[in-house]
Image (cartoon, rainbow, N blue to C red; front, top):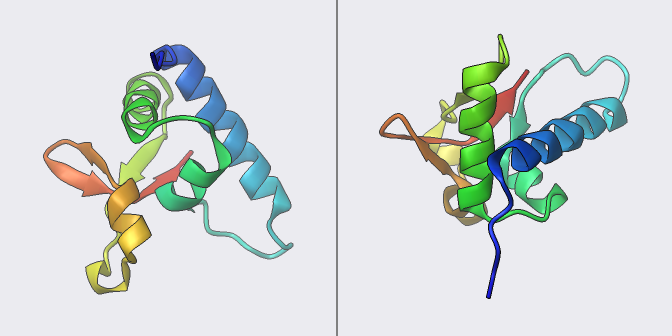
Length: 96
């Protein structure tokens, strides 16, 4: 039987993964965005758990955002599979 990770733990895991991702990027990379596809590869969470963690962060962390990819044609099959359904819209990117 699979056990869901609680929302706060999921939010913490997302935060840690995001911070590590930002720290690993080359100097001069200024974009704050992380794709949900990359996030999903870095955390041991289901898409439902990521969605709940992101919702928690949106409610509790000022400045945290989840957004759709503006160029929908650029989305891969993996991007579409990892999209988070929030606010009646697929979200493909997060940023703090």
